[in-house]
Length: 66
Image (cartoon, rainbow, N blue to C red):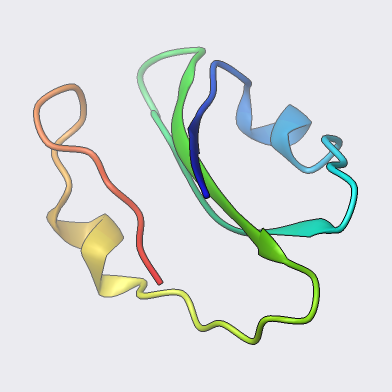
């Protein structure tokens, strides 16, 4: 379930959604606002695709993936 958020990086971990876990998020380094985060059901095993963060360009092409 992708979600767009406007949280600072230090605040995203504080969000708790019943029966879901945060598995990936993307934040901007030059802005106070975040970009996206992905929550999945607690029992789902995932692996974040970290190389995708390296190809993102802030405010032009931003993404996160599993």
